[in-house]
Length: 101
Image (cartoon, rainbow, N blue to C red; front, side):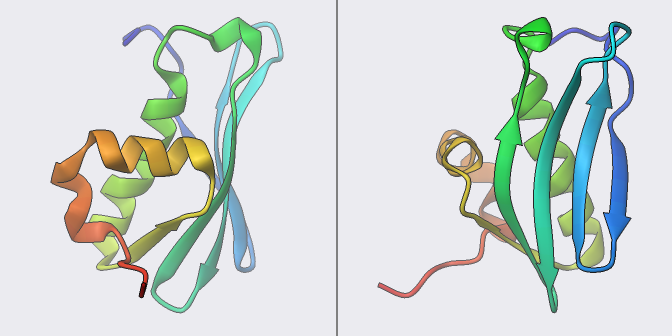
């Protein structure tokens, strides 16, 4: 991952929100979510070409995991990218909301 990337910001408007990383060229990488009670539903991750190959999408999901863990919340990763990150990181299982089969 690139340590010279800007910090990830959290923007919230009621139950909706996003984690966003602003690039110097005006590009934005984002992961959007909705809060429902003590659950965070990740519904979209978008990383423009300017950020590709730098681990930005993974950083966005990791930040949500850190915040959820600190707040005692669970995450439902509806976004395919976020769901794939949870499969790659079994250490995040404590914040993953288990879905009923």
